[in-house]
Structure formats: C-alpha cells, structure tokens
Image (cartoon, rainbow, N blue to C red; front, top):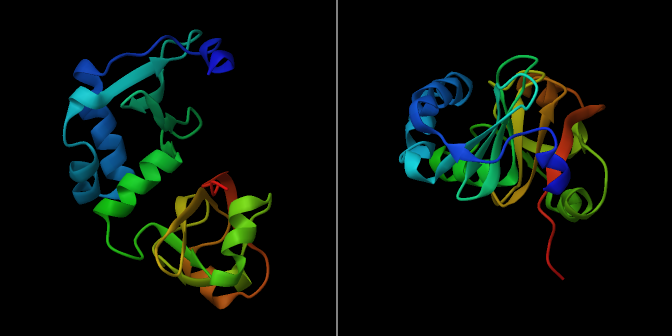
Amino acid sequence: MNRLKQFVTDPEDVGSHFEYLKSIFGYQFGEEVSDCVFRDNQFFKIQRSVNTWRIRNVLYDGELFLVLRPQDGLFSLTLKSASLIKQCAPFPDYRVAVKREVKDVIQNETGNVFAKHVVEVDRSLRSGDEAIIVSEDDELIGVGKMRLSGSEVMEYKRGVAVSVRERWKKRK
C-alpha cells in the first residue's frame, strides 16, 4: 500500500460521488447488482490521483474494492468486489466457470484461463469486459479481463479466454 500512496491521495469519504460511482457500476454490471453492492455509502471511501485529482480507487471497509480505469471510465474488479458481485448476481452472470481439474492450477500459479477449460460462461460478456473466474461449484478463483466474448469461449477450444489479474490464493 505504501507504493500505492505515491500516486493517489489518502482515503476520503465518498460523499457526493456515491451516486456517480453507483451509476458507473450500474452501467457496467446492471442496476440490480449496483443497488445490491452500493447499499450503504458509509463503508465506501475514495482515493484520487495526485496529478489529475480524478477518482482512481474505491475502497470498501478500508480495502481496495474497485479501480476506476482512466482509459474507458469503467471499473476493474478486485477479489473483494468480485465476491460481493457473486453474492448479488445469479450464476453464471459475470462469471467464467472452469473445470475442477484446472482450478488449483489457475489459483496457485501464474497463467490465464484457456477456452478449453471453461465449462460455463455468461454469454453476454464481451471481449475486454471484467469477468469473475469461478469453479464449477461457483467458488471464487480470481478476476480478470475477457479476451474472447462469452459465446466465442464456448465455440472455440483454443486460445486464452480470460487474462487473470488477481487470484484467490489458498491458505496452506
């Protein structure tokens, strides 16, 4: 977190920006999920870029929750936000479910999710969208960015389906 503080301000109350953040989240993940995730603004804080003073990070209960990408103005997910979305949205919404055999490999090693390992996917996901990676039992594995659309993932049996950004590490 020390390295992160060089580029962003100290956390501040979300205040009047709550509805703005909720509307971006609603555009990206749907109004129902947005209402579920952004129920109460007392747990949310924001961090701004020290250079542009724009909102960069959204913290929930003191932990990094969402990152607002300056390139497209949408959010990148963290494991904390993915677990909350998973509770609010029915399976398979916003998810890529992988085979049990590769769950541990994806969870504990570097690498991405390949199309041949996917058993279920939200077909409304597009290339470049944020995705929640889960096991067949809907157990959180990680988060990442779609490299193929949801329908392409099920049609193709080759290539990277999701570039994994963050993994849920198992405690030994």
